Amino acid sequence: MKAVIFDLDGVIVFTDKFHYQAWKRMADDMGIYFDETINNRLRGVSRSESLEIILERYQGTPLSLEKKTNMLKKKNDIYRELLSAMTPDDVTDQVRITLAELRSRGFRLAVGSSSKNAKFILQKVGLQDAFDAVSDGTNIIRSKPDPEVFLKAAEFLDVAPGNCSVVEDACAGIDAAKAAGMLAIGMGDAYRYKKTDIGIKEFCELLQVI
Ligand code: B16
Ligand code: MG
Image 1: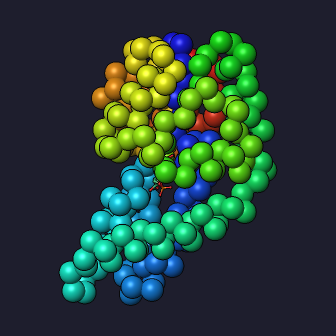
Image 2: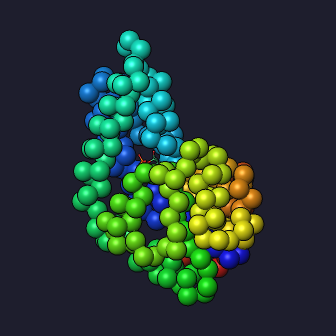
């Protein structure tokens, strides 16, 4: 292994509570039922695909593309406002120490996130210099489970996909890592997933498994 690619939400930071609050406000305004179980289905999924999942419960007249675009903007405006309150305290010491130790062992580190807000989040939590590359929702056409976001990360790092590990919390992200030909390390929801190569319960276990 020469490189480690990290998913962001659910691995490095926990922004799903902000996604939930933002989608909930938008869904309530539209009279659409939305709860935490539905929110769990949005992990690792792009913003526009998330909206389609939420709209499975929508029973009104068909929505125009313009209306959907407005809904996505509204959700993101609320989400960014919530994100702006994040500080370096939103990253645990365990994560910071483990990242620094992996780097000192010579691994190249990247972020591989579906989010278009990834760089903003990294800056808010003071991790903008902790990675050698960031591949995110702004440089891909297809989101997870497509391997594009991880293949781009490997390309940015100039490391062959077969020499990369991915750390993910979403099953769609593990599928993407395997489709990219990478070692898939699963945490949280992905800990027991059938395609996960190695499950870890704590972030610092990376120092033993890589
Ligand atoms: P945005 P990850 C993902 O981040 C989130 O898990 C997912 O819930 C979200 O819809 C997606 O980013 C897009 O985020 O609206 O900020 O572009 O887990 O891939 O780091
Ligand atoms: Mg995630």
